[in-house]
Length: 171
Image (cartoon, rainbow, N blue to C red; front, side, top):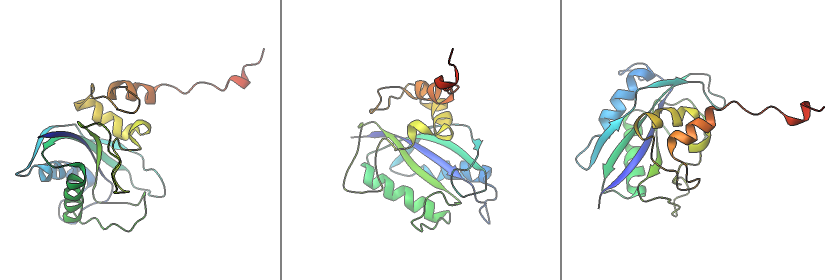
């Protein structure tokens, strides 16, 4: 049975051969296309500010892929692609990286298996504009199984101006 996955793609470190993060993203999308993985759609590349200690700006995109691989097998394949691009996993989050590939959503709904590094939907899905913006370009109606909201609604909520502190409006 074939599954659909929404994959988040990010880069904020140049590759010695490919070049800048903006050039890495299309190469990463091409690398996703394999005998048993079909890329159905991909977003445009956007730029975003880093989270955490990294100082480099990110290039981000998203792709919808179809495969018969289950989530742990697809995650292992994504890690192989990251390694091929030169990513070294050191156990620290938020570091500069040549390529980061994350499973954001899965047509099977939620996944919480024995792999501590795999949780679907991705824990940061609802709180990261750099994930929601490219995802909304290609999968605006895909629903988050936790909130029940689709990507377009999640993006709209994320981009909505934050409410003013009510305590500052005393009469």
